[in-house]
Image (cartoon, rainbow, N blue to C red; front, side):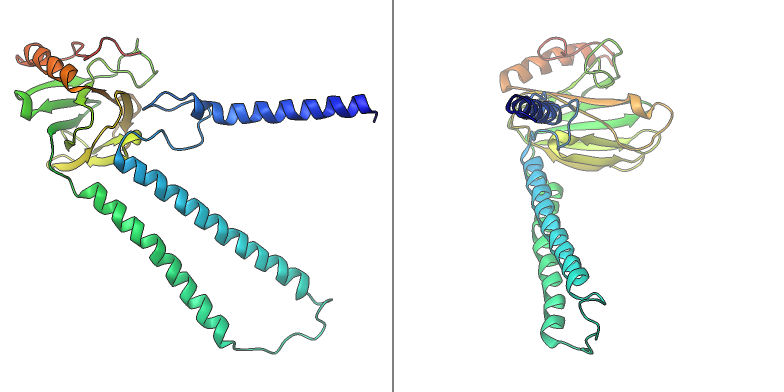
Length: 280
């Protein structure tokens, strides 16, 4: 192959690699906050302190598992090369090695302890609800969500999937609206069957069980739209009951509350109640 051919091959290789990287990471680099992206292969962008910890723990386990896998692979390669019948026609008669037995007992224990400590810390962070600035009650129904604001006038409204809104299968007519940088306590229950309230960007996933009130929390650190879905197989329209949360500043939230009191005080539902206009 001549110099020109090699140059063209090199340029083509670079182009293919660059295209592959763009394809693989484009969904992440240009992903909108709070929703899935095409070709996304990582976790969604974090929008809360809990999700920050989940991302850290995920990355920590990934590195640890990779190191263990490479170590075991290296041992297998050594065994295949050094201890086959051709290299060792007379096999070893060793039956015990105290040092090796101590090491392969203690090292796994230390690894498990190293995993357990941040794991318990993360569980405590998720389950220990701090003093709430706002309480919202989310009720799973067949097949939509209802939201009540007991701290703000006790109004309630339904949130149904909107066919004419984006993102597809995630846009709703009435979003849950909450203020940014505030601790939001979410009380979750089910009206008919078991549902599950799940917001990937907030690290939230909790069952909505009829006759039981479960609690979780989040603290959104960035304004914007965040989407989730019912993650429990709850019936024929399970795939069509999304969760949409709009995070706004304090002033915008106060304005939305006053408007929502008037719209939903009489029990009317399914009228648009966005704090900042239609969803994108």
